[in-house]
Amino acid sequence: MIVKVFKNIVAITNNCNSILFMQKRKKYFGTDGIRKKVGEFPLTPEFTLKLGWAIGKIFKKNGSSKVLIGKDTRISGYMFESALESGLSSAGMDVILLGPIPTPAIAYLTRASRASLGIVISASHNPYYDNGIKFFSPQGTKLSDELQMKIENFLNKKMTVVDSEKLGKAYRMDDAPGRYIEFCKSSFPKNFDLKGLKIVVDSANGATYHVASKVFSELGAKVISMGNTPDGLNINKKCGSTNPQFLRKKVLKESANLGIAFDGDGDRVFMVDSKGHIIDGDLITYFISLYYIFHKKYKTGVAGTVMTNLAIEDSLKKANIEFVRTKVGDRYISEELQKRNWLIGGEQSGHIICRDHTTTGDGIISALQILAYMKVSNKSLLELFKSIKLYPQVMINVPLGNKKAQVILKNPKVKNSVKQAENMLKNSGRIVLRPSGTEPVIRVMVEAKTKSLAEKTAKIITKSILSLIT
Image 1 (cartoon, rainbow, N blue to C red):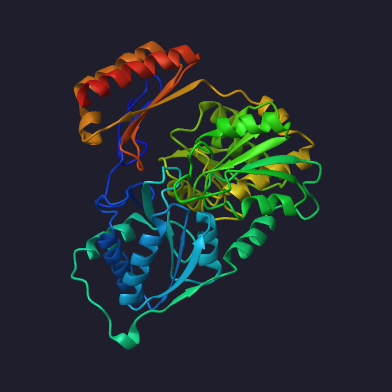
Image 2 (image 1 turned 180 degrees about the vertical axis):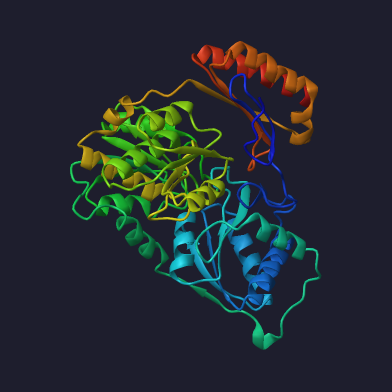
């Protein structure tokens, strides 16, 4: 039996619940805005200038005129900030500059200040030489596919400039970090504090460097900071949620109760317990859902993605909690939660949405919900970790080079390797094969009863892909 789950799935086979997943791509926009190596089209100053103009013309037509721009700490952010500011001004839009600040702060401030649009200059977890541009609607949500296509189509028009008296102005919101800190703290129960906890906070030398530690220390924790000295080039370098082994070492060295690591723009979070176990986005989503349903008494289901560990789905079902999978990307999680009027959803990568507080992934607020669950359940993070066992899961990122993912995934050789892997799993595993929306790689993920079987089957598929690339 073949089951249709998403519009852009190539095939789903019933043998082992495996998925061959292919991302439908627009010309410029990927899974999360526009992202590229700095200087490579479309991430150039010229394109960014026109992008600002196009967005300004589209939103100006709707009668609105205020746009917020924030960024992470990478060196190229200044260049793209200036280009966007010029483009928006030329279309008659006023610009409010927030400076370096987490992505979820921009979503919150866009909503709170009744702005027309929020713009984030960040490549999230990528190295410093990459950058990106993503957008938030007046409601603090990611832009729809339809609106993204409208922006792309408008970029084909000739750029014009409004009359001088109609040009937009630029301002700075100097108290943006303080506003966001207070917003985060408001998501933590007022009758609790963090006194007695020693927490290592890793800000990835990114956008949370000047806000994250303050949130936890002001709530009473003893905070040991790391990854909080950005220089424009060290974002995500040997730190942050993409490199949790460095946080793990620090937690063990300091004999801390736990550690919290964010990515470059602060919308992802990983945690580490007192014994060094890494708590990924799947586990964080699971623990928050238990907190919301059994302690806050919210009636809600949980949204995950095709990458969510099968143990999470099984455990939620055993607890009579409804679970649904979406495509990869917190935008799709958000859309599913809105459609079902649910509150909790998250990705394995650490994007967690707590919809009663936020409209997008927020690393700080997600971590605070885990800390609140620890308080109300009187359990340590280590005890929570021991309460569930994840299925072995192997992920291999295969670089595409100059090849097209769609062509590779349709190749009979790759399809045959997937069938071979399915036969080896014998209805006791799961395969997800998809191109990344943020990097030029194909992601091969296999779940199985044992790690050795997952590794073996993943290598078979990876080998077939590499043979078409090299």
